[in-house]
Length: 100
Image (cartoon, rainbow, N blue to C red; front, side, top):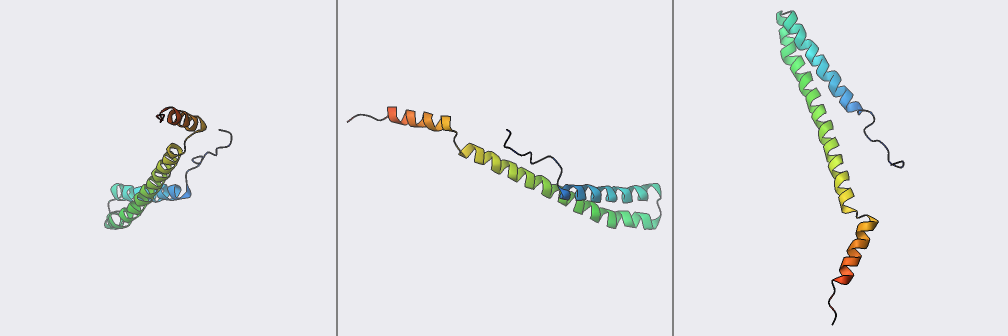
């Protein structure tokens, strides 16, 4: 445990950008609801939706990338046998041979 680094100590920069874009989109939409003039509604429907979609796509990218790296590290840990498992496999293989 002392040799392992914590890989998820801070959120990645891309995640922060995704949150900022999504909050900006939410602010535009709230502006259109609180001050329903044509300019605010058009801005919320076009600019706000575009910014929100980009933020959601970035968030999905970060989540999928994290899932993929977690799955890869989990598969790598399963594929590499420990010393105790290797010795147990060798012992079982030697006893299962039939004499001639």
